[in-house]
Image (cartoon, rainbow, N blue to C red; front, side, top):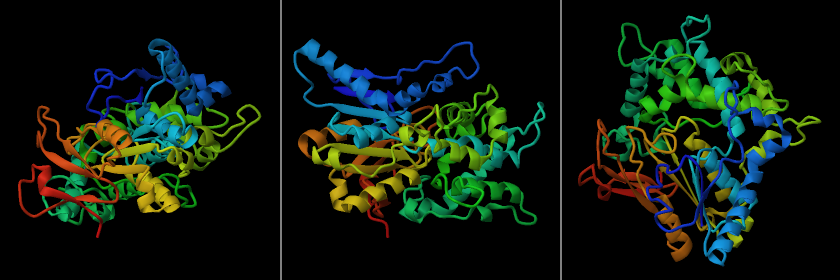
Length: 445
């Protein structure tokens, strides 16, 4: 049996489970958009029970129905059950491992929004208000977020990251693989007197530094983790699509995270047709507090039913469950350092070697959200690796990934090893930089 949610097939899920012979079910969490209504995708959340079903209760409900159908049709229960999800589906995947450990033998959590309430504060309110400080005024009299950073600015940021970090893995190949050593200071990207190319204005450099550092409260407390320094931020599918948009306001974080934060994740919810106005004016501290609040109507906080932050995998581990997580380091929706911080908590709970028997994490340099990104190798068989781990006991140390051969791709067919965390792909010093065989996975140092 195979359960798929979120963006599927995602990067790393290059096979089709249905064609491979699995009984497959997918879920929309039981909620459909109300057509013809402003923000109709989120209005279900006015119902407290619908919030809970969206958050975590749909996982056991859908799985029970699927297993019953399989048993009725085939006359037997599934031999093995797998869950694959990306984005919100990746969050659900982690919920399955943490809260419903008996349902699945193996789980792929891809680009998981496992701290979705914090990510929504970051993506909709905190970040919008930062970008508004450097945005020109649009025709509607409000900041034009799409022009906060121009395409030239994004290219400058990408170039600066490459200049600082590209060669750290031993190969100047346009991919930053040694993330552990890549820590440039965006303040240094500000134009010096007389400089006008490959730099940012001081105001823009200051905002970019704050974005990379992750969302914080007014007192400096961290809300969401920092972001990886990956040159893929300049890709059309990354910051331009998700943070900025091609016109204002049409970026993905406003249309997704602002609607989710205002309607689903805050108690009481803010029901408004003007998500841009909400993002521009909402108080970061207050909205963050509301994600953890309860009311007489909304008696369970959004953070508790939505997020999947617990490193407690005791029950899942005891039954031999396997959890494979991966995230692109150019992902503009959910930062790799956030899932990295989670995995470190799992390691702290069980010890590094013991943790790796149950859960493994892979960084995908250059990959955007779930898949794509001009700078990455995003085609690899994560599900196949999971099945071998579950059914043959072959834990994945590396997965070979291939770059897409799409029109305009800078290195079609290039291959790279994806390394089980904390190892990183390092050039051996000889061989073609287009081949994974020329790289090996090494521990940071």
